[in-house]
Image 1 (cartoon, rainbow, N blue to C red):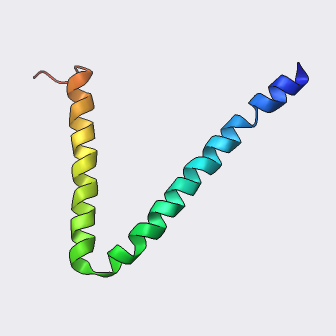
Image 2 (tube, rainbow, N blue to C red):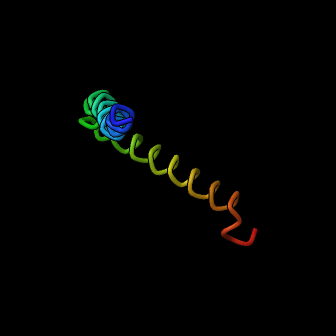
Length: 67
């Protein structure tokens, strides 16, 4: 039974390292795009648009605002 809990305790560390790996690989891909002001503004606009779309969609789906 001790082996089971030892194995389960490894999952949060795996999740953190997996998430950080994805973040660093995406940042490495996006980093050259941030050097050009035009692509930087477009990229920031896309990120803000995606987050606002997600925010308003979840807000409407959860019924947090009268529609």
